[in-house]
Length: 179
Image 1 (cartoon, rainbow, N blue to C red):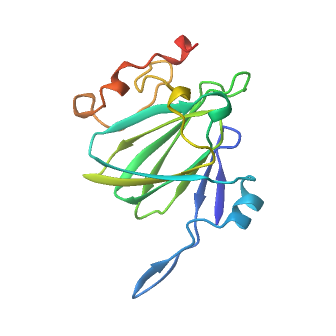
Image 2: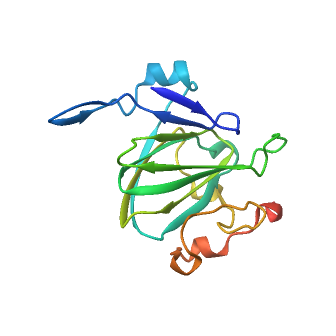
């Protein structure tokens, strides 16, 4: 696998080695030993999958305190713009974001260590999104930041009038207003 560092410490883009021929392709989507050597020691405990249509923006979500989660995300169908925002107190990149396009064609994965808010926008007609987490979900530890926080300046690559949000995601505070 090829690991691409980003400006935010610990956030990396992973490009798997693809083996293709006239039958199709094969690649390892995850290898514990190689991941720990190249990225970080980790023990994933939960896998999640979502299906969304064009214009859906999910996020920016995180888990607080002892329930914080690292995530390894990828797209198996379609295309999304995936975003990580550094919300680690005292981090030199606090408030900075990194965005990467993940598609079924590029097979890229995005690793977000604990302390990141996470979200994505669906750029294709439909997307199936999968992610591994290193901690179990805990409703009481949910946190979120407004997807359109002007201080973050995220270009979700979806026209504002086409953005589709859940009721919950339409009412999150700005980063500067978090407790």
